[in-house]
Image (cartoon, rainbow over all chains, first blue to last red; front, side, top):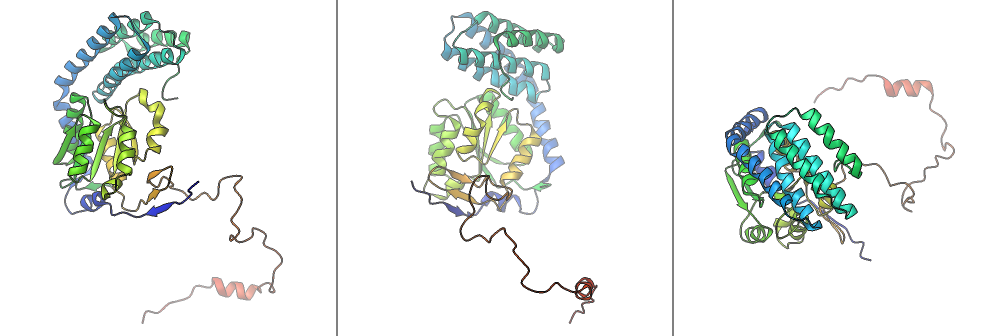
Amino acid sequence: MNRKVRILRPVNRLAELVARPGGLLRPMAIARAQARLEAQRGPAMRAIGIIIATLEDMLSAPLAAGNLRDICRVADRLISLAGLYGMPGLAEGGKRLCDLAAAFIASGDIHAGSLRVHVRALRLLAMDAPAQGVLAELDKVLAHFGARPADQ
Amino acid sequence: MERMNLKEVRALVVDADQFGATVLVQMLHGLGLDSIKVEASAAGARRELESSDYELLICEADLPDMKGPDLVRWIRRLPSQTRFLPTLVLTGYSDFRNVVAFRDAGAHFVVRKPASPQALFDRIAWVSRPSRSFIECESYVGPDRRFRSMGPPGGVPRRATDLSTELGDASEPNMSQDEIDNLMRPTRILAE
């Protein structure tokens, strides 16, 4: 086995550029980025509606294991947007959908009805339904199927 | 880092989700980047990286034609200086299960989405650190991931050239208290 290891010190051009005079202080840069993010709020809310509709469409047809990965991929986009735009309840609902889909991928046993319940819950959470109660009910479904959060 | 000048930094964003890429680009513009190119696939990113110079890559973990880490692994094995490109991989919630695989591909940093403006600023500042070396070996090509010197891992024998951990007996007489006091005494140093 070749155990040769080379340790290199390449020129980091990014480091050279960011260190040049001028630029933005951290608070100012973040405030500017936040303002640009806020300018996208309208399109982002429409995108969230489209993502939930996409999930509903995906679950209206018979499911195969390959579809579950697609459901996670779409739910990931929802989690990101909900997180960026201050909708923690919706983001948590999206995470639970991913956790449930991952549990079904692992077990090979798909319960489409449970996934549909989660997507209906996302609709409620997007309409500002009280998140705590909705999420607690989803947790019961996750516990039933032994789903494990991806971040644990 | 409290201040960054990103005006002349050329960034390549690789994200198949058009709206997600739009939001990311807007945040990067806010942070001060002017030159941002977006590609929706790994194939497009590879073409760009072979034909143009970039200082920063921000890459989605899950691309339609290739996993993000595979793209990073391809970059790390390029013959050009592009193989050292500072690289942030953005992972979704479900992909975060595979964070070790992303790290082992040679990414500088794996950022879990949603990537807030604060997180983006801080991670770009992190990969802008000039002191980080690069490791090239058979199983890994990428930034040095060691940040602390913790000695050899448990169970690994010491090298033959290392000094013995046994101190042994003193070879000279102990110092007197006067000698110790003299060592500790404040001394005035006059500049010439």
